[in-house]
Length: 143
Image (cartoon, rainbow, N blue to C red; front, top):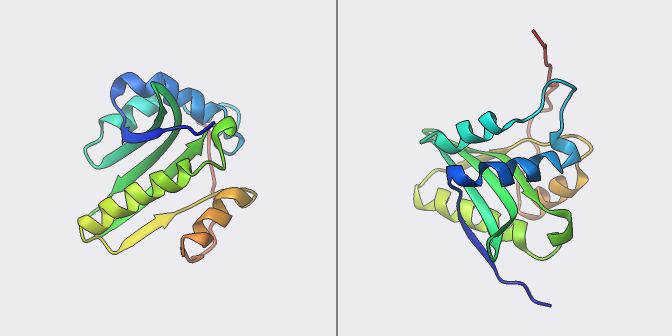
């Protein structure tokens, strides 16, 4: 069965469904007490410097990509596709939309960071000609 996916910009009303996608992805769950919540998602959606793309199958959100725009670079913050919709070109379509928007804005640099164990996104980034940069260690302190 061929699906027809539309990629559109998310609205605040989409926050709950986006949060469900985030929490269903093992690489985004974080440490105990350091997890995404509805207010985080609404905050991301409300920032003028962000674009939050969602992939829709009908009215169902099946993927999302958060893109943060800065003066001279763009940061691909998070990309998630529902497990039952993977390997159908949805992630590719979101990457294409984001990269084309960045080109239109004449921004030359796109950055992305991922978990070391997330081989899926590392493979996708390599296929799209993203180059490995410096290695970082991420620290968290709960106050």
